[in-house]
Length: 169
Image 1 (tube, helix red, strand yellow):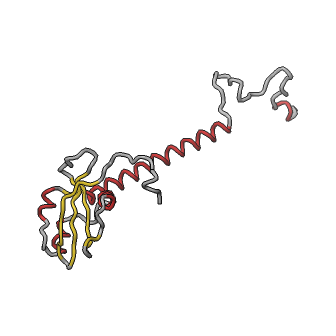
Image 2 (spheres, one colour):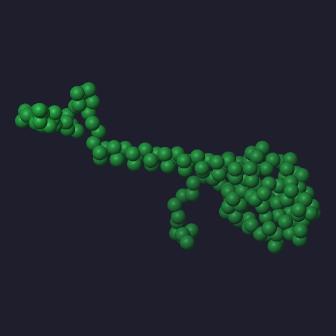
Image 3 (cartoon, rainbow, N blue to C red):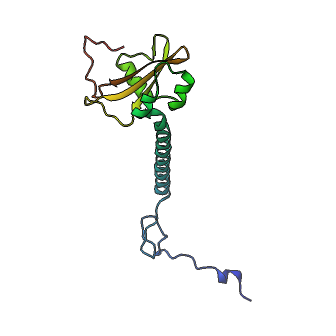
């Protein structure tokens, strides 16, 4: 009867080498170390997370763009003195936060003469001055359209450094 040790592989000889990460395997390929695999997986996860964040941001911006701009025909259809509910049905819900910020920067307030104003970017007209945007402003007071205005606002050129005449606050 044969012993159970006859079926085992012979012990490695001192001249044989164990497979190592730096030594090619019999197929000629090098094995990737565990640390390299971990770094690669973390980098791939980071790239995937960045792609998902950009896609979500693009979807949000696309959805919000419907509320940011109106056409000249929509602006003209709103009449001063028109009841507020009728005018708000013609205008998109919300307003352009960019246009409102530019209007405030230009010295226009969001509330003029106790009127709540909405600001929209122009969808089909361009401003006459370079670096400016055409903004439509519609203000509501006493349950009706109080005023409306077409404004060219915002110098979109970058601001220079602060000087002593304009202290930073």
